[in-house]
Every structure is written in structure tokens, then in C-alpha cells.
Amino acid sequence: MNVATRRVATVAAFLPFLGCAAPSPSTSVASAATSGAPQKKVIVLVEARGAAPELERFIPHLLSVASDRGLGAIIDGRLSGSHLADVGAPGEAGAEYRKAWPADVYLGVLLAPCQIQRREGRVYDRQVNPGTGTPVRPENIVVSYEADCSVSVSVVTVLGAAAKLIDVTGRNGSSEVSTLDTEAEAQAAEDAAERAVKKLISALR
Image 1 (spheres, rainbow, N blue to C red):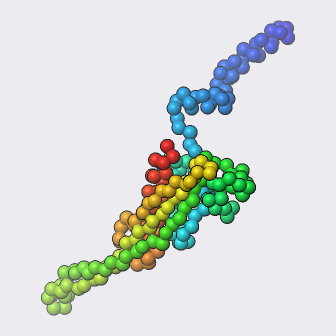
Image 2 (tube, helix red, strand yellow):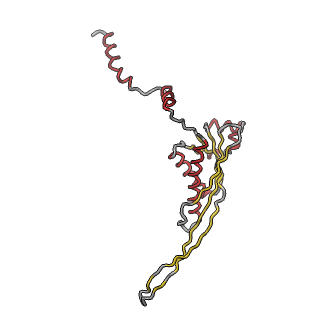
């Protein structure tokens, strides 16, 4: 077998593997456009203000729920110390931030002080005195807490334009919580995060 014949045979042997090769980026984009699959936006959380205990429950839950519900991974860019108003406005500071944190959407979070109500109820339990056999009704006091946490999420999608506001109020799902106020508030903060993601999905379609 001469050299030319061997080359033809080698190319013929690799043709099946070339047909299974990964598509080029342009081919992938074209396939996505053909399939109609929506392209997820790049979202950066610029700043978050509010009481630390509630923010510590709100922010991680916001990031987790956003990922689980298909909004995409929200990038936490708070360590830069920037403010959303500066990022969205033309200027050197905003340009530097956008260069370091390129995105389609920038977010700012303001968590207002949570409102909490203490509720006290009495429960009577019918029992029998083991010594005398007479019925007794001991009284038990049940203490529960109900919390409301209001959150405003500012959304910047167009530079120089006013931020869109998304307002939500989260509540603790059950009053049967710890006697620590912070637990009811933390549950309400997580509920507010879920409501915020739901509204964000609708706003960014």
C-alpha cells in the first residue's frame, strides 16, 4: 500500500468520529435559537441592607430558590462595597464595577425591620388525679410568635434608567415556633425570599 492510499484509509477511518464531535459555539447558539430555549440572564446582587440576622436567612435562601426555580445563579457581588445607585448611573465608579461584575441585571435589597406579634393562648388538658380519682383540668400556656418581614428589591436592567421596585412581605408559615423572636423573623425572611424570586421571574421575562 503506497503513502496516498494509506492517507485515504486513515481519513476514512476518522470520519465516523468527526460526525460525533462536539458542535461549535455558533452551532450551539443556532440550536438554542431553533429549540426556542430561553437564555438565562446574568444577575448580580450589588448590595443588601437590613438587620443582620434576617439578612443572613434572606440572602442565602434568595440565591438558592433562584437557582432551583430556573431564574439562574445570582452572583453575590456585595463584597465590593458598591451601591446600586452608583452602578446603574453613568460614571467611572459604575463603569469599573460593571467591568469587574458584568451582568444583564443588577439587584439591590432593602429589608425593613420585621414586625413581630407575641400571642399567648391557654390549653386545658383533662386528667384524673391519680391519688383521689377526681377529674382535674391543668392549664398550659402556649406562646407563639407571628412575624411579617417587608423587602424591597431594586432591579436595574438599563443603565441610566430608574430602578424597578419589587415589594414583597414574607410571613412565618406556622406560629408554632421557638420562643425566640428571631426564629419567627427568620422564617418570615425566607418566605420573603421565595416571594421575591417569584416576582423576579415574572419581571425579567
